Amino acid sequence: MNDAPSEPVEDIEIQLLLEALFLRYHYDFRHYARASIKRRLRQARDQLGFSTFSAMQEQLLHSEAMVGRLLDFLTVQVSEMFRDPSYFKALRDKVVPHLRTYPSLKIWIAGCSHGEEVYSFAILLLEEGLLDRTIIYATDINPAALDVAKSGVYPLDRIAAFTRNHQQAGGKTSLADYYTTAYGRAVFDKKLRAQVVFSDHSLVSDEVFTECQLVSCRNVMIYFDRPLQDRAVGLFRDSLTRRGFLGLGSKETLRFSRHVDAFTDFVREEKIYQRSEA
Image 1 (cartoon, helix red, strand yellow):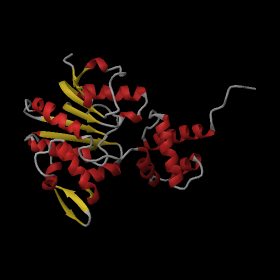
Image 2 (cartoon, rainbow, N blue to C red):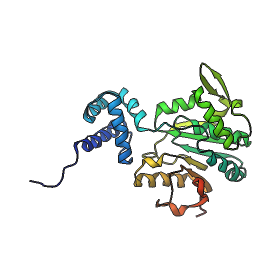
Image 3 (spheres, one colour):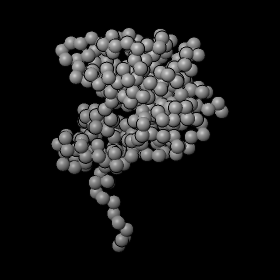
Image 4 (cartoon, rainbow, N blue to C red):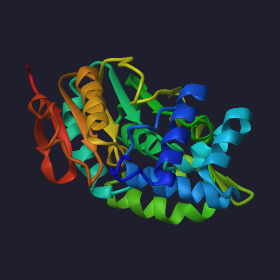
């Protein structure tokens, strides 16, 4: 008899559920940080009314409608416009002067969620006179989140926080100049997304699709395990032009990445890095 300790049934169920999600629908969460993914799956199990992960797996395999519901739990959709205003202030004051030297610009926002960061960048670039010569690539793996981002519609009760962040980020106009209100919602001006390309893209399985001067991927890699973090950073490195910029979230770092030598600190306190010449 094998005396080796057996893996807990719940862990086995989760592993099989993630494998089923990948094999059936090609969404790969197998290398996300296990503690985080387990917490989210427990929330999904309880809120969707399943008694076990095995029951969730059966429903997932036989109902495509289950995929979207599960993705809403597995992909984090919590953000706000100009989140961490000091990050956007550093972009405005220290990165934008470098971006001005390019005749045209490409910016990649990886993991754009519901689009708050996309509109933040569009407004910042518009205020700095750069939006017309910029293409912003906004990507996410969640189709429902991309639909929200494309619409540019947010609950009106969020606007006060957005406005405060915009001001603290060095905004040169009133945020109210960029949206209209109706029925308890704020609808952001279509001109802000005229230069935006929304696209489904996975940092887990997809490859580089453009060369750009700036990549912003914030509060995404904290949910990845170390090999997947390295893969994502490798994609960013290969996407960036020489001396291009990479912005990460406040709790993220390149310190332990195998690609660390490809970057130098540019604004250390805001986790903004610059691609090296080599």
